Image 1 (cartoon, rainbow, N blue to C red):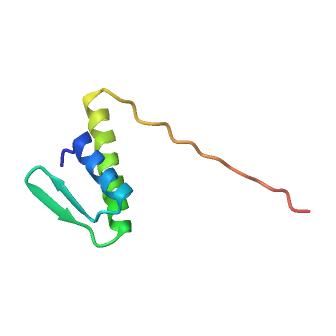
Image 2 (image 1 turned 90 degrees about the vertical axis):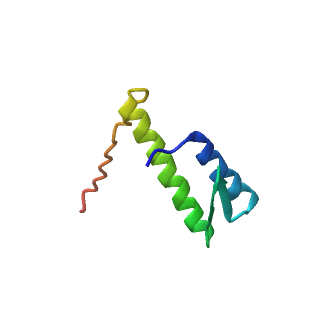
Image 3 (image 1 turned 30 degrees about the horizontal axis):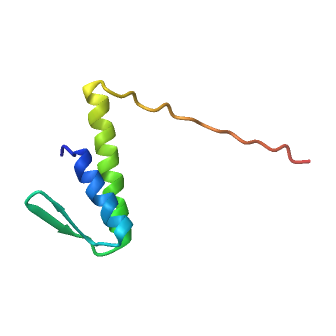
Amino acid sequence: MAYTPEQLAALERALATGEHRVSFGDRTVEYRTVDELIAAIDVVRRGLEEQAIAAGTARRRPRRVVVHTDKAT
């Protein structure tokens, strides 16, 4: 599904104000918990990032691997 920055802004506004109901044009979605709202924000953010990568307007963030070792005596 294609997402818009306006949808992300509406979700973030709802989270900031404590609302559980978000409207996008003629559609309204009601989230039961804050965790569901945060999950929706994450989905939209990832979707917008993937859309930007596909359009060539953004680059995929490089992955970073950190290895910690400890020599046991």
